Image (cartoon, rainbow, N blue to C red; front, side, top):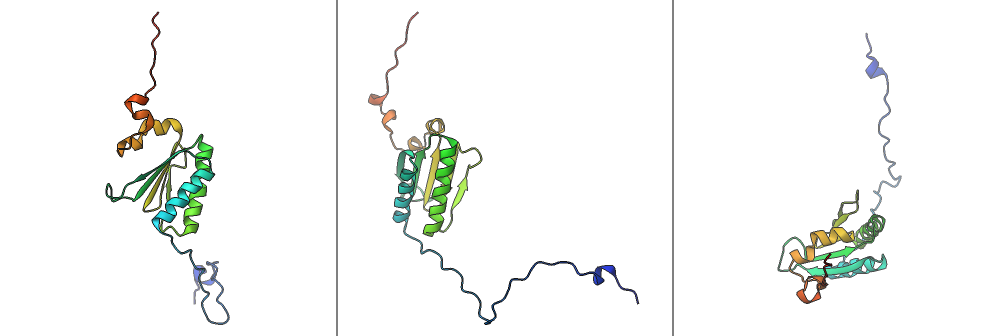
Length: 158
């Protein structure tokens, strides 16, 4: 009778989770009760304000788009601040019970997008925000966009 080496050798397998002795399954930790969209929006705005975001604008998309109810656009001074704001906000949204929280753009932190379903948050560096100008795309006039608010430039003749 010939034994196979593979059958004779026991391989370490995945460790099995310990089962409770009482025979009852362990109760899962209760998740935070999800809050309504307006409560999440207030939390997003407060978090960005606490992290010293600049030029926080909230756009209401209800009736304009089916992708979200609100869009929040804010500016950070540098990539490190934007990364910190995104991390703090994602952590708070998950703790508040947001169904899904997706974060994009953390590699370069020029433009970070946080999608939590009914609220989309855009965090920009100042020059990137002025380049893409999302507020104008959604029909929101910014103070610098109004004809009377444009700074006049003088040309020097040589």
